[in-house]
Length: 397
Image 1 (tube, rainbow, N blue to C red):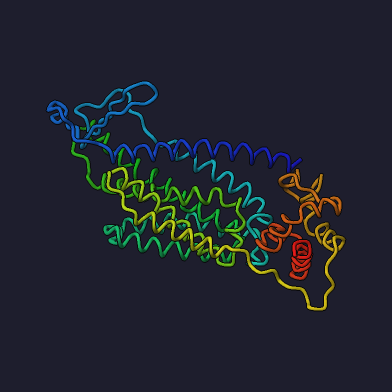
Image 2 (image 1 turned 90 degrees about the vertical axis):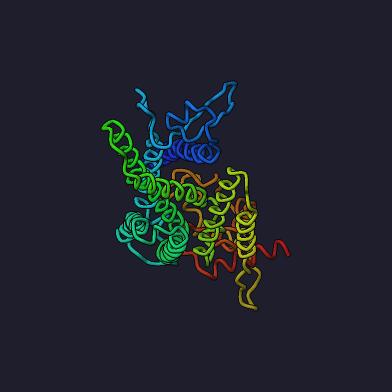
């Protein structure tokens, strides 16, 4: 019954996370695009009222006229829309999923004894420290003198994220390391909204209502954090889907792959921002696709671990015995492994014929990617992986 409840909570939480994430990222991308396409107002009346830029657009059969004030309008409107709950609910639903899957079920998804034999409480504490400490370190950098120079800030942030990715990949399963890296970035993003951007906007509104000049530092900080958020977005989206691609997180150099893909995502976003201004450079795209090409080359399948030279060619019966012992606890009509209510992807290994039918999948997941058994829960040995590899090679000489 517990597994059934967890499955439903996972489904509903993931659905809500995707919905709210679309709302947040969509609004963020739109306002970045809008801000970068504003044109100087053409009417003296608008200029005298403090309008700094405007944009005309047509969408869905209607015309829209957007205006941005240099500071604030002469008088505040009765209804002023704020954009914050998209960010907050995305973070809340994301943390709900993190707790549900990676902390509550840490022994399945977060801990890999082959990487680091940490206990469940210690693993959860490390995860909490990573997420909270990541925000504190990032916010401290932004507020320090280093944050006043964007090039210096970018370099320091790159070093910080690289070290964090490396440490996480030495402590957690690859899948757990990736998702905690993304959760840390996502927390930085929502922290920027809650702790910097929204307070600045509230001060701007209060200053207007009180008839005083707003503190310009709020605008400077909000602009910096908004820029950071737009470049964090694609790396976070990558991490959200990375658990479907074991070739990424199961690699020996998974931390380098994570950083490389994050840089590629940020570079692609740089190109889009430049394109908004009508002067795109091909350098960011060259960097992005160059990194992707290098990563694709690194991810080519690794050689199969060979059996002893005098070992007989493994039979289907040999492999089915291994699969029954190491894989069938999850891949059965009724899984015996806690946390699973149905066989992943509907794959079962009840009979030798079903094992033979899934030969390529078994080989890819256990030998090439080494992603299964998940977290090596069933303690498959190197000899057993080699047996599966030799058997598959005998089928495909």
